[in-house]
Image (tube, rainbow, N blue to C red):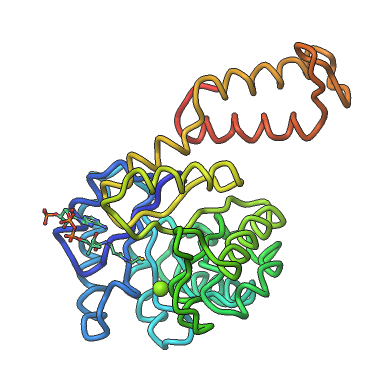
Length: 293
Ligand code: COA
Ligand code: MG
C-alpha cells in the first residue's frame, strides 16, 4: 500500500478516473466528501460502480464508511459488503474497541452473503478525536483484520479547537506531530503498516514530494492521496530504489553467509540485528511493490 487515492463515492466521473489511476488502493468515500443528503445515492452509485468495473482496475478497493456514531455505518455495510471490497476504512476510530465492533459487523455481513469469514480488512483512521490519539496503543492485537493504521489532521483540529494544524512554515504543530508519531508507534506495536495522511494542496507537487520523503524516512510505508496527480509522486517515493534494494540484499546475504551471527562487519562498518531487520523490511516492501528483491 504505497498510494491510497480517495474518491467521492457519489461521482461516477471521478470513480472512473480513480479506477484508471496507478493507485495501489482506491478508497471509495461515503463519509466526509459526500453531502448528508447524498448518502443514499452515493451507496448505490459506489456499489454498482465497484461491481461493474472492478475487473478493469488493478487497484485494491477500500470503502470509507461513515463512523460508528452516525447511525449510517450499518446501511453503508449492507450495500457495500456484497460487492466484496478488499477493505473498509473506519474514520473517527476512538480505540481498538471500535475496530472490534466493526469486525463483528463485518462478520455478520460476510456470513449473510456467503463470503469468507475475515476476508475484508480494516484500515482505521486513529487520530480524528482526542481520545483516539490517546488510545493509540489499543490497536495492537485488536483484530486480525487490521491491515494498517492511518491518521488525519482535519477532524482532530475541529475536535480540539485548533485554528490551524500547521505553522507559518507549513510544519505541523505539536499536537499534530504527536498524532503522527503515535500512528507510527501504534502501527509498530501492532506489527502492521503506518500510512501517512493526505497532503491537501493538490497542485504543489514539490511540497507533496518533500512530505512523502519525510514520511518514508520516519517509517510510513505509504500515503493517502486526494487527487490522481498525487499518485505517481507518492508511488515513486515509497518504491524502494535499486540502490536501497541492493544495499539491503547485501546485508541480508552477508548475515546468511556468516551463518546468522549477532553482528558482522561489511566494508569497515558494523551491522547488527536491527540493521538486518530494517534490510528485511525494505526487501518486503520492494516485493510488495512488484519488484524482484
Ligand atoms: N479521484 C478521481 N478523479 C479525480 C479526483 C479524485 N480524487 N480528483 C480530481 N479528479 C478528476 C476531476 O474530476 C477532473 O476530471 P475531469 O477533467 O474529467 O472533470 C480531473 O481529475 C482534474 O481535476 P481538477 O480540476 O484538477 O480538480 P477538481 O477541482 O475537479 O477537484 C477536488 C478537486 C479536491 C474536489 C477533488 O480532487 C476531489 O474530489 N478529491 C477527493 C476528495 C475526497 O475524497 N476527500 C475525502 C478524503 S480527505
Ligand atoms: Mg474527515
